[in-house]
Image (cartoon, rainbow, N blue to C red; front, top):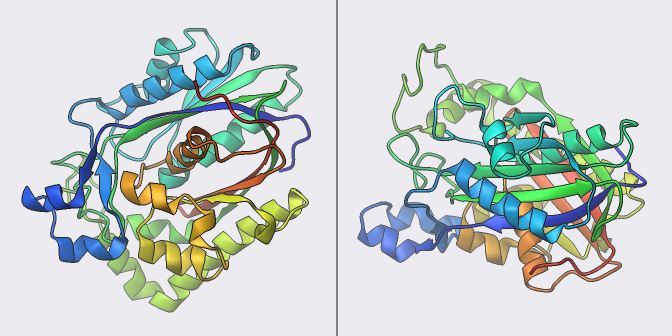
Length: 341
């Protein structure tokens, strides 16, 4: 989807203190031999604040930076894991604690691709002939035991906690949204389901969650080569279509914001097949924050803004992938240095 008058007005991030890998090992939370290959050196760990509470902090920051934008007409909240209450409309909480108005507020559950999927939905809402307006997109996750073991539940990726936010508008911002593309392959949803029968309650099969079990069941039937090829094909198609719609090319991107997956997964699915130089990505920052569920892209972009790395005229590509499978890619044109205070 290509847009002519859609902008990113601001971003915001709230990350708790980092726990170094060495400290986690000393506390018996992980084994270095099982984590070192990911390249992760530390992860953000919340001792008490939930994902939605951190999302609210990030949203307040983003809204403060996006003063003078039109009224927020949509709130979307994306997440990957448990949000702190059962049968609870978490997006309404985010709305109440931030904009406090009566616009629609919805939750998006597309796993690690939730943030960019929500951005695409917000973009469509704002450009559907409703006139001037803005949208608030947030993400928030806290990966805590006993339900989720951030070090072991998803071998190859270590999860960090945090909240992120982005404000989209039709009236101007620090970046113009040049293209948004999403590719889906529903045939791979079983990677997160495996052979497990449907249950009557959460954590009925195993606690904490162990994604290696469901993944192995699917790979056994589909074949490893086939699975890897489908993952790479989806990512390639999403990137290709997005840069084409933006009238650009991947080699011309000044920055590429990738999900904070383990280094092995990034190398296998991004660095090598797409010929991406890690120095043009946010990996050096992401390896110290961990995988923030649905929020890696907003947090990575916010990190670049905080480092004063964004300049007018630059092109930035945001890439996301989530179980389902879905792949989303966003291309931005930086118009001005973003406000970070």
